[in-house]
Length: 468
Image (tube, rainbow, N blue to C red; front, side, top):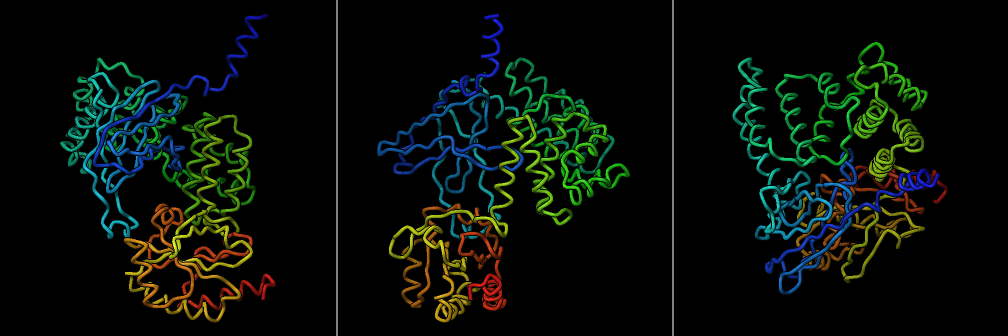
């Protein structure tokens, strides 16, 4: 009896109790005074980021930080033009090597499609048996194999020897006994087979995903998963049995019905895989117009409540946070930015007021042209709504000089201390506008610009709410 009780106690112990510490350290004098924030993905469906630890680089160049970890994990950090990455294992210490710091150009900051340079961080205390060494070596050999066969792949040539190419690469790694690496390798080979059309979606799904261990934290597994099940709702929805998907979501708003419909596909007879595919598709379809967003949120909420898989609860919550953060009726992303007097200003400061929020830069012609219109709106309606402009410029001083010269009286904020604010608001062009109500929720997202009859539409909304 005692043995049974002990077994039950061990069974329900949180996994966190089995986590081990990971320590990151280094000596980079040229980074002195900078703070390094080490991140990972909350999940690899939404790719939402979370901070694991941060380290201040001292005057002597030394830094260190640590965090607890349960399984091997991909971590990264953004700095300058780089996105540096590393695979870390529980219980390990990493003495890191960084490249020379290189700041982004202003044009990079203004480019919403800027792609950072990927950089695999070096490790001074590494060895040939270490995970990063093996992954970097494998990546180099795999990339060479892919490049050598790229013409045959894309021309769908019968001369392509997929199995022979894979065997040649794999012969170099037969002695590696690291589970994460071997899983990574397996799904990279599967990706090669998928891209070369040796195995179609159904074959890949049955061989590598159906009734197989779900590797939520393995980048190769999740990269291939996201490829294989891309637009799956639309693909299966074209079949006779799959047409019911549109009714399950749009009319019934039923997770149970949706699961039953998808379960008729032979590649999704496993409930765990079926839930993960539903999560991916709900995330992706939210940015399309084929399904009602409110209906998809209802199905998503049902899955988060009913699933018994903790990873799926996390992914569902991350999807909801991501897709609703810029939806009308939801609170927009928070910020705390410096004004021209170096005071921190947040959205909380405007609770109880309407806010016409703009994202701009003082070197954009389109923005400069509309600043004058914003000034006119401010003079006419400052008692009805606030105008707040968040600027992406090289410095706060540059914004201040511009505003002082022009004499604008509405509020200007500088993005510098929270540069991710432009990413949070999905800014892809200047200017971009939002209108926030007195409860701090988005009332128009995006909102029209001043030259798109914003004044009329703002007053129409305020009148409908009985505020004027």
